[in-house]
Image (cartoon, rainbow, N blue to C red; front, side):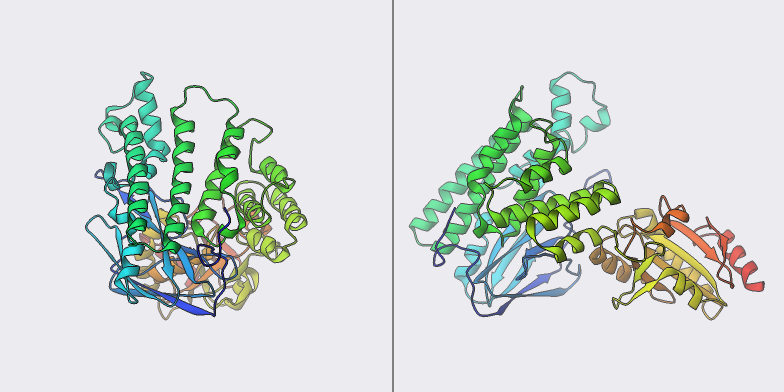
Length: 493
């Protein structure tokens, strides 16, 4: 899918400049709340994401109230960013360099972009919102509904005569997927019709016609993929079909698009689940792609990056180290390999200790930290941004810290098996550094010290006495009398 620079090519380079995105009262988009109080969480890491000038995916979480600004430095004429919508939809916007864009939200929480440069750009940014058949069940786009496995499980169960609990049948999960498939077809037809019409009337530039044509191709691939997986009664040669519908799509000129990265992730996830042709998991898939000379080089490197990330997340530390070395052999990119593995809590150093990073990115060891606070009782809270019970205890933790303010008690909060960007957000939201000290654990998975402390689940609390010795390996949480009694007793010793 080659494009000329003057038409559509994400690799075109211009002088460095900024794109400014201003978010106005952004609602929660990473979760979709249902009527029964439950919610669906997006599998993506950030509500806003884009590919920076170093070809790294960056994530951003705007503030919920008022205006929040994201400035993107770029040397490309346009930058694509992804915006989550109600957890299931991932919307993509292609913004002109040197533009300032205000992003507000309609009653369905759908983003509306307003360019400071021109109304023409605003209209082109909001092309997808003008498609008539854009919405399906629960206010999501039909291709997003079609791609949600929870709907398919219930639908297929009903079709097969499996007894489904009434609570499920009466919930949001009971969606007529045959109707959704028809809606998806109508959506794609209207997308193509409107794109052709607006291009013919010169309401949309060649650049944006190229971009939305690319998106149309990507959407059709997803439709075919979801239809094939969920609607075909018998599946044969699944991996061959999946590769065939994707192969013409793969092109290195698209590597700067976050939507292209997401498509690669979906492609790999689907292939890894199909147990044919020796592709049974991410490890064997990594081995086969590393040797595949038919895949464009930059695209192959992104695939291997995604696979290394999955392997480092799902498999052993030994597997992560092995495939890190294979990644380096295949791509020659040592720095990125180390960054991926380190991001999964696997460090090359200090594995006999717990390696910590504070909010100023200063690194310290847990043992030296305990030693520096000798003479104080130390209350350690192991938690993570994704751990709901951990975060629900934070209001009580604030009360506890206030009660012991001015006394010889130190409160340490250590984020375990977390993402650094999510830790920083949760740390700020939880006010953990008000009378406390917050750290990110760099080597969550490779630390022998964590294994020795038998930290198998969180939240987990440990108390050290004034001499730096463990007084309670499984201490109570911050709520209630018990923790106060234990701290008071240790203070008197």
